[in-house]
Image 1 (cartoon, rainbow, N blue to C red):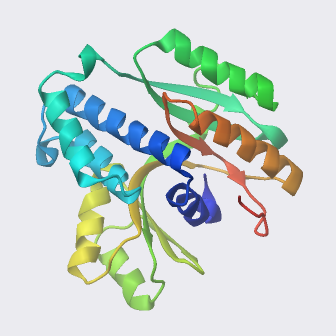
Image 2 (tube, rainbow, N blue to C red; image 1 turned 60 degrees about the vertical axis):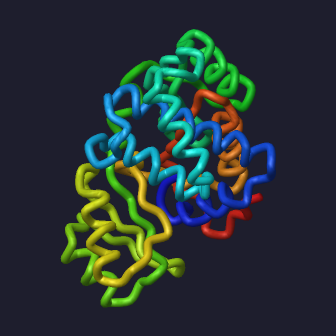
Length: 245
């Protein structure tokens, strides 16, 4: 999710119930498996996709043993020979919002059918390729629970492209290839980040009312519950006083 709601979305993930928690772990392990095979290496220092996947898994507190076992299985060619393909889908939600979906699948026909069913059932619409992708730019995003001047100066010094200040701290935007260089720079300056991940940042946001926001979140939740879907991004600017379950 975009903008000032990113902190809340992360807290929602971390506080997910056991069933959702299991699904979140499964998605991360799938991403790690795909990254090892597509990158041709089980060493994250030489495989940026794997480094991203491991960092994302650790953010959601996936056990290290699970991460290491997934890497070993993928490098050994097990997992029943599953070969995951990266695919994206685009659509529209309530209030004229745009929705961009990243998925990993071993059956594209199944995945697109599942995604379309969510849109149809929840009041959205699946768009054509390129219909909303132009509104989103891939960026690195770091969340730092410190909005002090020292933290801002350190972020700028180590390569941040943009900084947004909130009550929760700093939301730091970076070039995708510089995400971990900036995070490492902040660590060397004594700052501990809450989250560092690749994201899709909308060029413009659309303000939605509480009713449309609730409908949109139901679409997002339903999409995120699909086994093949890894990430869902929107250009919605949700109400400040929206209560997230």
